[in-house]
Image 1: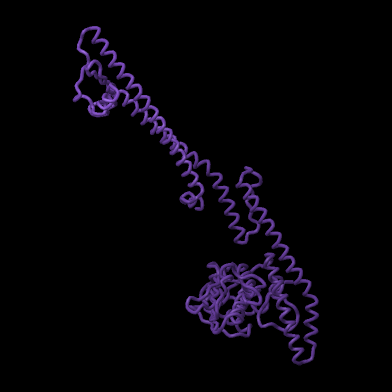
Image 2: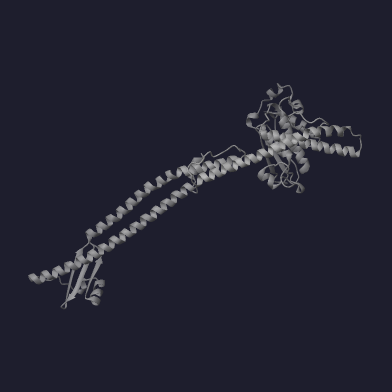
Length: 455
C-alpha cells in the first residue's frame, strides 16, 4: 500500500523527476522543431525567389529569341506588396500563400514595359508540412519512450528513499534495532543518507542502553543500603522527627523500586501472566489500596477481560495517584468491556506530555521541568507488556486530564471463564507469583499501592 500511495502521490520526488524530464524533452523538441521549421522556411523562400527570378529571365530571353509574346503584366494583376517593391527597386519577388495554390511572384520593369511570372510552390509547401508532421510525431514518440524509461530509472532511488524513511519511522516509534542495511552500495547521496541514519540509530541505541544500564546499576546499588536504612528507621522511637525520617525513607524506597521496575521494562524482562479478570472489581480494589478516593462506574454489563491482573492493578494505581497528585477531584473511573478511563477535573496534561508522551524524572511542575514522572512512564510500560494502549488527552469541556487504557480485543473473556477462576484475580493483584518479578519488594512497612519489585 505504501508503494501504491507513493505512485499516486503527485508531490513525490519520482513524479517531480518524471515531470521535469518530460518538460525538458518537450522544450527541447519544441526548440528543435522551431529551429528546423524556420531554417527550412527561409531556405524554401530563398529557393523560391531564385526560381521565380530565373523563370522570369528565361521567359524574357526566349521571347526575344523566338519573337514570341513576352510575359507582360498589368499593375492590376500584381499584389500590392510586389508593386511597392517595383516602385522602389524596379524589380521584386513575393511569396503569396492564397487559394487555390501558393505561388512565388517575380516582376521587373524594363523599357517601359512590366514583365511578371509566378511559380507554383505547392510541392514546396507540402514538403514543409510533411517535415513539421514528422517532427511532432517523432517528438511525441520520444516522449513516449523517455517518460516510462525515466519512471523505471527513478524506481530504485525512490524505493531506497522509502526504505530510509521507513527505517527512520521505525526508530521514531521505538524500534532501535531498525537499520537500512544499505551498506556502501551505490556510493551516492542516498547511500550517504542511509549511512547517516544507521549511524544515528547506533549512537542513539548506545546512549539509551548506557542510560538504562546506569539506572539499573544505581537502583541495584542503592537497594542494599536502603534496606538497612529502612530497618533502622522502623526501629526509631515514635515522634515527629522519626516519623518525618520514616516518611522520607519510604519515599526513597518507592523511588528505587520505580527505577528497578523501569529497568526491567526497558530490558524487556517482564512477561504477562494473563487470566480472566473482573475489571470493575479489580479497579475498585486498586483504588482502595491507594488510600485515595475515586468514583467507579461501569458502562454496561459485567466487564471481564483476559489480562495480567497485577500489571493492570499497577497501571490503575499509578493513574489514580497521578490524578490526585497533579489534578483535582473528583476522580472518575469508567470501566467498559475492554477499556478503563481515568479522569480528573484539574488543569489537564501539559502540552509536552500530549505531544511526546510521559518521560521519566519529569513531573510537569515548574520546579521539576516539563513532562511527567515515573508513575505514568511505568503505567505506559506495563500497558505495553500486556498489549494494551494507554492514551492521554484533556477533556474538551473542563480541560481535565483523561487517561484511557484500551485492552486488546483478544483480551475479551467470557464471564463463565472468570467464574471458573474462583475469584483469584484480586489475590493475584495483591500478592504476585514467584518468578515473574512483580510481587517482590524491599522489606519494611506496607505500601498503599502495589509496586512490582525486580529481583
